[in-house]
Image (tube, rainbow, N blue to C red; front, side):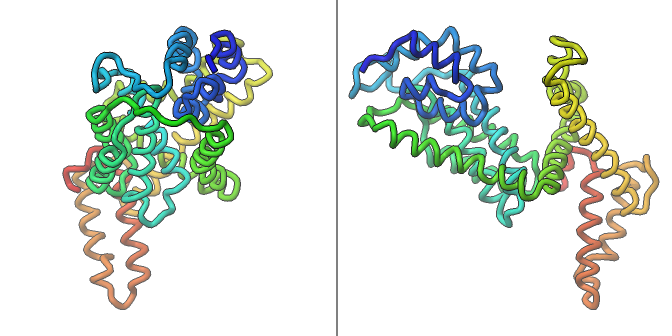
Length: 339
């Protein structure tokens, strides 16, 4: 049955951020993407206003034929590539917050989450990419940055490049009933939101700590590039500042954005407390140079290495891990050359 443009616009206006119009048009991957990102943060939903006629025309094309534009390989799309990068990072951050307790998280959980985010964007519309190659690239990149939250960035970059390299048009598929499609979308939505909801409801304190750790790692990395660091801080406070600009200090929902600013301030204070504790662990005064930090770290590692303390292994292991964490907190963001 042909899809109507008016119906599409109505669904876009009523439930666009939840992907209702994409579900109506049979664009299930796009619908799932909008469900998980609330319409691309609202920006993607608004931008689609001018794209809906082309979406409807695409949905009304004859079934059983491959949809192409004059060739076997779709043209390169910088917008799709950027979206793959952003969604891959987003999926990685969510996994870092909700699944980092896993023993093999940085080897299995993180590359899988980032790779699936990239593949989800790659499957939007009439295009797709190679599943094995994209996930393989993510899994091969992950060990290089093992144990570092910043690994999300290179994994997403490599997976996005691989997905673009192996892009292709979707083959024609037999139409499925709405119940089957909803069942599949529901399972995918629960797989994404279930661990996050469990962490937030059943382990709230640890979840806040993971959020602070994650934001702390990214802010610390971007501090190596001052301009990017200030840009990231502006992005974190953008919802709050936009609301202040539109309605001023008072408003029905202003408390939400005040809480947003409190979260940001909590992350900043978390960074300061983390550095102060690190100085205490290493027995240094604040403002110590990198050479002093490195020298003190080597001295303490020699003293508390578990191999050097066979009669007090547990205590040595605890001190050794504290020293490692303190050194990591005080070292320059790009300490990868010592990896």
